[in-house]
Structures are given as structure tokens and as C-alpha cells.
Length: 215
Image 1: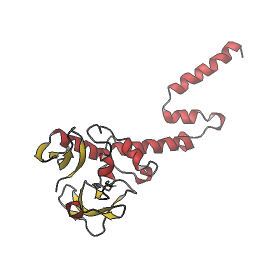
Image 2 (image 1 turned 30 degrees about the vertical axis):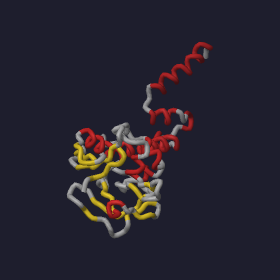
Image 3 (image 1 turned 135 degrees about the vertical axis):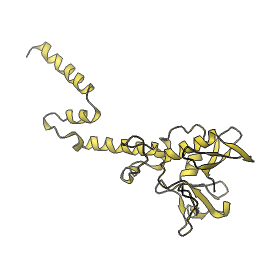
Image 4 (image 1 turned 90 degrees about the vertical axis):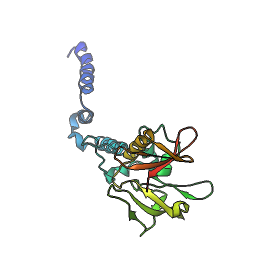
């Protein structure tokens, strides 16, 4: 083989791999020990990471449905899931943690917690207190955060539907924010994109302090 031909081989390989899909590149890289692309550890790891990221955004292989695959959510921490959410500009920095996980404020009070979609959260529902509010999937329950019972609102939180992804919650809050009407103090309410009325506390800079289904 001529020197010129040898020099052309890396260029040809580079051209081929650059035109392959991601999964095909994993398979191509196997060389003489080629395995089916979905059997390679690297491909499986990448596939799992992508699926978990899509869950946090409210996406799936079916083109945007909110199917929850619990086998994939465990590979990302709740902090990573929250940080991957889109269109969060209207929220204060800690608001999504407040809504999705619950928190203890500086006075030691249990606050927030308005969805059960994430696992291993500080917020928990107190057994036997759950009440269905309507046929849209809204419910309420007494909650505790890190073992501290909530005292505000008689200890209750209202909850978004159980099958809503974190991104779907964010999107509905944003829609409610855009059509909000003033109620009193710093309290507003609006209708989310799924037709659910959402109450919001908004600060003087127009940022969302908290948001939850109206009772």
C-alpha cells in the first residue's frame, strides 16, 4: 500500500463516523471485536442518561408525553433533575425545590411540597390524610418536611396530579403566571395549560415565591 493511500485511511474513517448516528458510532468503534451497538456498556449508559434527562423535561420517545420511567430517574439526583428544567426564569432560585421537594425555612417551619413526582424528598405525605379535590387529579394532604409537620394552612398542601412530570408542572405554572389576576397581598391566581387553577405568591420583582393548585 502506498504512503498516500495509508494517509487517506484515517480521513475515510473520520468521514464515515461523522455521518453515523450516535448509537452506530458506538458499534463502529468496536473494530475487530464489533458488538451490536445497543449491547455496548457506553451506549447503554448514554441511553439511560438521555432518557432521564427527557423525563425531567417532560419528554419521552413517544414525542412529548409525560410517561415516568422510575428505572431511569434514579440515575440523576433531584438537584440535577431540577437544574435540567426549562423556562424557569420567572421563579426565584429556591422556588422549584420548595414546590417539588419541600423545605424548612429559617424559622424551622415546614414549607411547600406540592408534588410526589420525585423520590427521596424531604417532604412526605402523612399517612391517611390524603383527600381528592376534583376529577382533574388535584388532591391535598397533611405533610411533613424532614419529620417536621407543616403548620401553615392547617398542615395541608395541595398537590399537582400524580402523573405530571416536573417540566409539566413548570409549564403549567408559567401559563398561569401569564394570565394571572390579582387577589390580595402578594397572592395571584391563573389557569394552567391543562385547565387547572394555580395560586401563586409573587415578590416585588415579579418572581414566583411559591405556586400550587388552588383548593
